[in-house]
Amino acid sequence: MTTVPAGRAAGNEPIEIFGCRVDPEQVEAALTRHPAVTEAVVTARRHASGQQELVAHVAVPGGATTAEQLRHHATALLPEHMVPRTVVVLPALPRTADGRLDPGAPADGPSRSSGPRGPLELALCELFGSLLETGTVAPDDDFFELGGHSMLAVRLASRARAVLGRQFAVRDVFDAPTPRLLAELLAAGDPSSHTEPCLALRAGDGGPPLFCVHPVLGLSWSYAALLPHLDQRVPVHGLQATGLPTGAQAPGTLDAVADAYVRLIREVRPDGPYHLAGWSLGGVLAHAAAVRLRQQGERVATLALIDAYPLTRRPGEEAEATRRRVLAAILASVGHPEEEATVLGGTTAVDAAVRDRLGLDEAPGLVETACHVAELAHDHTPGRFDGELLFFEADEDRPEAPRPDLWGAHTTDRVRLQRVPGDHFAMMRSPATDAIGAALTAHLRATGRIT
Image (spheres, rainbow, N blue to C red):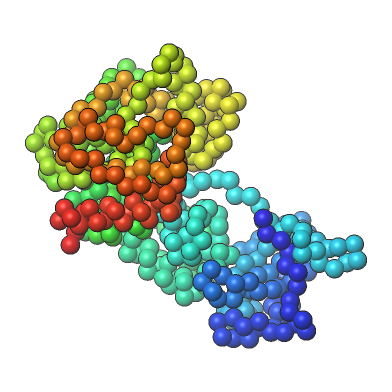
């Protein structure tokens, strides 16, 4: 929660921003020239980079304009160093009984509950957070409100080009300053679907890709968070459950699901060596696919499991109870509170929650396929992979959590363990992605994939 600042330095002394002296009253005067603004107060705060930055709290009765529009308004009237990096829009500036600004009053903007809607959006959230050193960034967080400026926008454009293979101008960051708006701008001329069975997250250098197998919901978007932390030469493809047949034609075993994914892998890359990774249920599927590839005589140079364990039914647990656990995991995977009422509402209620969080009309089919594949996983006995297995373990223990050595019986080589910060559901967020990306890059270098 933020608060309205107590005020400026005594005597309204100028603030130094990037070596330039700024009179806050000049900035306030520019903001109040907007017809929707009745009052403005401009102060300074220190960003994590150590630089001072301007923050404006403005009164906008009736919400007649937005922070983004006010930044555009200020940009047209002021030099760049005088444009506030953060604009907080309020119905009125809170005051004490004697009419002074109340520095302890809450001044939070609207809540942002929606998660990333697609891999590009998710990757941009990760890039924003990495560049601005702010940790987790939401899709609607404003680059400039988080402390960004034009020089950082240059670096953002450069990083996006190198990491994602996407190009945009610095001016685009001003026009679309949030991950969601920037993703929409970049996707405007791109007709590709986020629900393709094999989703190309990054083209890379055209060499052997890293194939990432979806977690419980059946979408591989989450792996986009790894892109800023993996060597940019490595192509990354996500395998998704969207291509699996349903109804009477649905696969009857987890090995049949793995066979379908091996076919997708070999359509992209007919011959090895292969590099596979999987988080959660995706790890179980990646292991099954690796076993199949080895049975076909192919070399699997990388098998990385990210906090993934063989699934078993709890003693005495009925199928419906198992299904409810899967539905709860689906809700958690999209950042929805695991409300008992939603889970007890069955697939219809969970369908609605997933559609709301991800904006996908395909939600009912995704949820039904997810439940079916998870059911198969509970009846699956993993085969034996004849190679080394990399295992990334969440370092925040859960009650009755399984242990990585469960995989020892399912590999002929060692299980190489690395603990990473966070719990199971934080594995595709920083700082876990930093550690996983660095370790995978080092492993790929050791295999000769990159030099």
